[in-house]
Image (cartoon, rainbow, N blue to C red):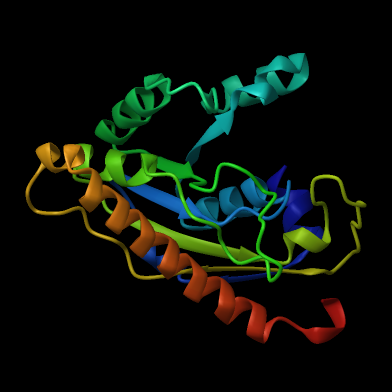
Length: 212
């Protein structure tokens, strides 16, 4: 999948060096399109790592996708159920030194007219606090012009797809017990989404106007 993606789109990857060459990291991204997981995967692969995504369980209902997702080690999430199994599996992956990718918005259908990130769910921060692993925000822009849910598909050759990593968000020093502090978890999640928003705003402002 990566070679066709690499050749078809015009990629701009900023901050790839922020992904550690080894050891665990949680990557959090904004979610605008069906292309986003492939874009974030390409970003992680360019850093010499292999990503594991928390993917919505509905994708696993398709027999073909189920084989592909399971083969790639992706983690199904049953949205709206409160099921903690995905975070448990993600924590085990981080314990093994892997890269876990999460979309805190939980959907690609943002309610914001400028497509800036919505309020995030707290799972990524709780996972970070529990494991002591930092969160690296990685924003993307351009994929929404390719394929958004309910919209047309425009696989135009050479379209710019941009990604940018920011400063990592470190877990609090108080340790795993602080995951029970709902006010702290909410504040850190809002700070994380604010960082993503700054990155998205920067990409949007520089994105070539003729492609927008």
